[in-house]
Amino acid sequence: MIAEPNAPAADATPTVAGDAQSGELNLKPFSFATIAAALALAGSPAFADQFRQAADNAQVDCVVSARELTRISLIADAFASVSKITTGYPYNDFTVTNEPVRGDIYISVPDGFAPGRVTFFATSKKGFVYKFTCKVAGDEAEQVFVSNPAIAGERAQSWEAKSSPRDAAVRLIQAMATSAVPDGFQVRQVASDPTRVGDLSVRLIAEYRGARLTGKVLRIDNRAAKAVVIDPAAVAPNGSLAVSIGTAELAPHGATTIYLVEDAGAGA
Image (tube, rainbow, N blue to C red):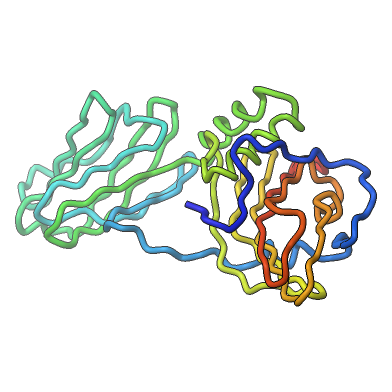
């Protein structure tokens, strides 16, 4: 969840960017690339689940349980078949079971499994092939979730294509304002140091990446002892499709959130 002060209501109408005149504060010379280069927040998952990203024909490294079942699931896809070598020796063989309802697979290894690692190839129902190379370790059951960027990109492209680019930008702002994630978009939460611009500090909070659209959530703090009025169109970098601001007039030492959307494929 992205919880920032003065976030706009879910039904707020964002400003569609254009050739707007500068307001009392013009931030266009400010380098938004500096904020975008901030380090990604390295959060720990609530559980010991393993999340992997792999393209077609890529290798997936993971850990399978030495004593319990290990579940491997393909996000937005399902396993169609698994290919592995059978040695004929019980202590050298592991078992793969295909669960037909969800399309997941379950792996188990015998006590004293000699190789210490399992290797197999898997083909998904959407035609992607993965090589799994997994270390055997631990007594607890394991879960491995694998996502393919190509599938996510197709879903994001479909979401964006439901309306014009500017209307899609407005829908993305509405999603960001409610901490929703549009289908196929990847969300990156950022822990960046604030960048000072006069009496203001600007900090990137999160970034939403789709097929073409990139949405950014920024927090602006007024460090001055006087009120400041922000023109959303002046804050947005050139080429922005839409921008929305929680509160245009910042009280002394107040803060607000800005949502903006850019077309990442405009220059492609």
